[in-house]
Amino acid sequence: MLRLHAWQGFEVLGCLLLMALCDLALPFATQRLIDDVIPNHDVRGLVSWIAALAVAVLVGALVSYRRIVIASTMAARVLAELRQRCVEKYCSLSPRFLDHVPSGDLLSRITNDVDHLHGVIERILPALIFETATLIALAVYALYLNALMTLVVLGIGAPLFGAMYLTTSRRLRQNSRSLQDSMGRLSETVNEQLTNQTIIVSFDLRAWAQHVVLGVLRRILSTSIQVARIDASLTAGTHLVFQGTRIVVLAIGIVLIFRGDMTVGALVAFLAVVSGLIAPFVTIADYYGELSIAAGALERVQSFLQTSDHVHDGSATFERPIGEIELRDVSVAYVVGTDVLKRVSAVIPAGSVVALVGPSGSGKTTFLHLLMRFLDPNTGSVSVAGRDLRSFSVDSWRNHVALVPQTPLLFNVSAAENVRLGRLDASAEEINAALRAAALDTAIELPHLAGDEAIGEGGALLSAGQRQRLTIARALVRNAELLLLDEATSSLDPERELAVLEGLAACRRADRTIIFSTHRVGAAARADVVLSFAAGRVVRIR
Image (cartoon, rainbow, N blue to C red; front, side, top):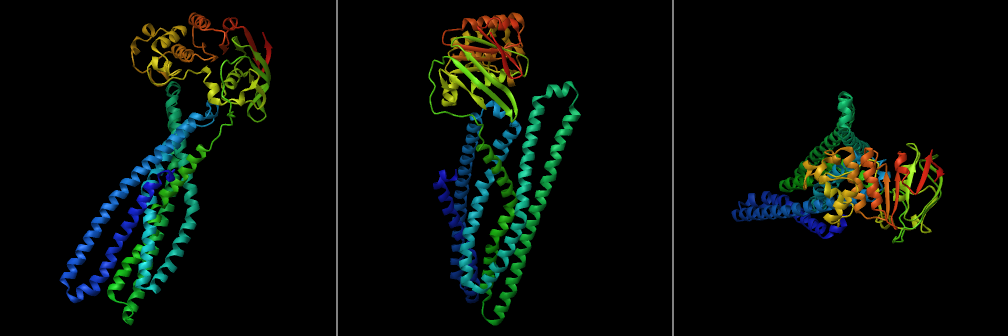
């Protein structure tokens, strides 16, 4: 993703190189000040020295400003694109697959984990590149000043720094990944408790809920302390080596001055250069904890982006009409060895109304999810007009299907806007017709939610029956050839259920197939075909 912004990256590199050159001005000028200007009382040289340093500082400040602006802009764009990829990914995954992924953990990956990468792109990577460029430039200058002491610095400091990073890297990485997992667990737990707040209050589970959250917080605290200790030990060790190396260099330099092999100005300049040579290792130590946390966060984001929900996406584009649907020896298992559907075979005529009946857990919802392409059969096949459903692209098939899920799923927008989500180009007349077919008169039943007023999160301001009818209207406005209803009238009283069934009958046409699951005998009696389920099998067809 950074390669997509290569031009800005090269500009950042150019700024970093200019900053490194500007930073070299001080040690280079210091040597000339001590060895030439001060001994000779060179006033003109002093003015030139001050002017040169002022220019270097000003240029360095301007270049630093430009570098920060470019790096921050690039980081914001990259992270926005990364979040967009995450959104595209979870939108492509089937609801059945997402049932196995805690929503709080997924939210944590898209928000918290991506946030951890911001500092890496904006600050740490540019800083490491800058320090590397400075290290190379200063190493060349240090070799020019005194090759022996430069080799001593690199020979002592580099191996010690390397040993410290190797001993702490693995532990820090593991603890950082564990910390991110715990943060994801915290988001998951809090999200779950907010969703189930009615149960928590009704059963007086507040103490239990707090205990669960505190348990997660304790794990986060323990891991955070462990990360801080490892990070602190690395930083302390780095500074110890840094100061120790400077002392060794100072001692060697004084001996060389005594022998006449080095000037005082050269030693002062070399000490400044030594600080620059070792500074990259200190910088890495200071950023290492944050870098390790970001690495763990990136692993979590990558693992999500590489996720596959194993629904085959064919290459053919489905075109109407749907025609006859046939299932041949279809078996489905969510867990290996435990079939939810067992060798189901059935033929659904085009334009028919089909009722699925049977006890809870008998496989009716899975049957509907197969037709919605939320999952594929483990064995057997589902064919439409003689072609395997898996040969069509998932999107082109779903464009011809509408689903009313067992649990009404609504957005916190107006009632009309929720219906319009079934087909974004639906007119006001079509939305009102769909509402009438679903036996929902918003002017009478929802006067408090008139106009564009939102219906609350998940439709919290509506009754259960109103939520169900609103989801039915959303499916009807889609004008799909295959309409799937999963216990769509379970929250309705008999009178409202009859009104909805009559509305569905009025929407019936030759090229539309309607399949609905129900526990009510009266509703099933209105169907052309009835499939009776028991323990994952179709035991009777009427």
